[in-house]
Image (cartoon, helix red, strand yellow):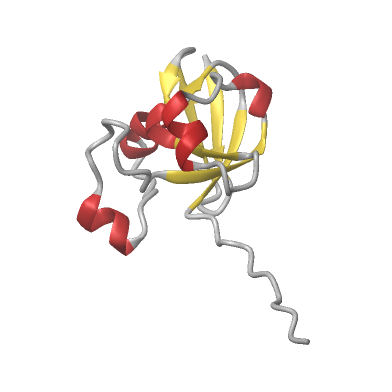
Length: 108
């Protein structure tokens, strides 16, 4: 058994080793989708990239990124994952619906 901590929700979920992160979130009534994601998610089939989460701690306890994640997340921080593609093998802290960082544009 392992612990998944959902930071924003201040909730811990106990999960079996090799559990799918998306499934565990939904089983524990954690809302991982933004409004747009709720309307167009693929149901966990790894085709839409709407189940984006940020891993705050425990990245080493997750499965390696899939090829789909590598392509879809190449412009995102390294600690972003797609919940439907992520297998949890140890304790992890997750931030749901991460806010994109806004870079200041330089005007010359």
